[in-house]
Amino acid sequence: MSFNKYTLLKILVELNFYCAVVLLVSLSFLCFSDEYSLFVFNEDLYGALDNNLRMIMIYLALTECVILFYCMITKSFRLMMPVGFFLILMIGSMEFYGEINTVAIDNQFTMFFMYTGISHLLYGVLADIDKRMASNKEDNMGIS
Image (cartoon, rainbow, N blue to C red; front, side, top):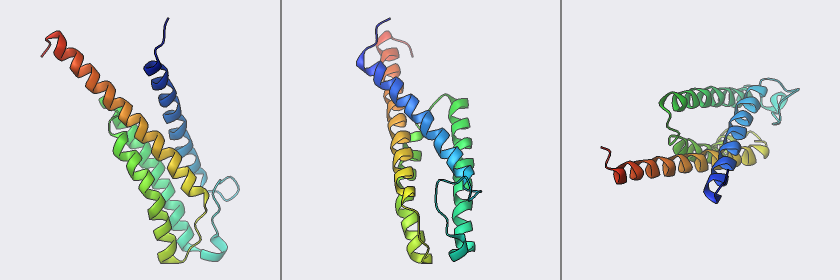
């Protein structure tokens, strides 16, 4: 069985994507607990504002599950491009939230959203390339 460079790249990007999904969902749900959370929430200092941040993470995990389920049902993962873009935009949104509400935002959020966003973006791009290649192949075979 011979692998070309594109196939190897595709496998690596896909594995990375699913690791990023597991990381996003699990770390978001672990935000419920101070004991197990990777992120630092200064609940004693900021109270309800930090709880809002926790709820944002829970909504993010639920949204990720719904979007992933939709992509699996439709067998089209091109939607991951805008998802990745918005995950990267979350870096700025979190900074803005912290500035407006004078809440200290954990620096680990930046790396978390950068990694998950880039992983989603790359996987979406790869899915788009695959879809276009399949479409071109069908066109060349004369299938309408």
